[in-house]
Image (cartoon, rainbow, N blue to C red; front, side, top):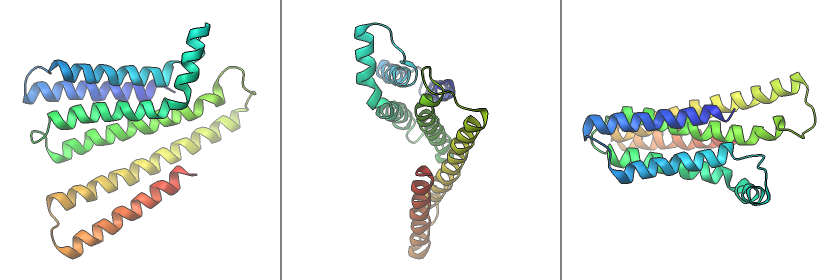
Length: 189
């Protein structure tokens, strides 16, 4: 389950490298360093489990409460590298696609971190139906968050791109606040 968010992160890095190479040439060393830190944080948050040895066990206990924070730092690093380097070059709607990938990475990582105790060694045996219900719950939550996030991103881009009247801006702001409320409600299910 942790492999999916890692594949999404690698897709974002490939997108960044191709995009930057297309618009500006070879990536700068600081961009490569930020992308490497993003990969390191993601690997530590997603894959560093069941360590053997006293020091490795201690490091796992230190990392464990901060796994989601490490994923958030990884999102900020890769998003910052992409959006700062592609500022003014890429279309706004193409950048919206990259933002959706960042959301996919964060949400699938959160699901993998939350779901790990249900299938890890040493836990109580679960039935097939329990695992299916957990997966259906996670998939439903992920689908709702993506749908609402895409709607919010599209509405915010339409505010930036074309709607300038006070009524339309207020109406779209109200819709965005409603989408945020629904996202909060869905995440608490």
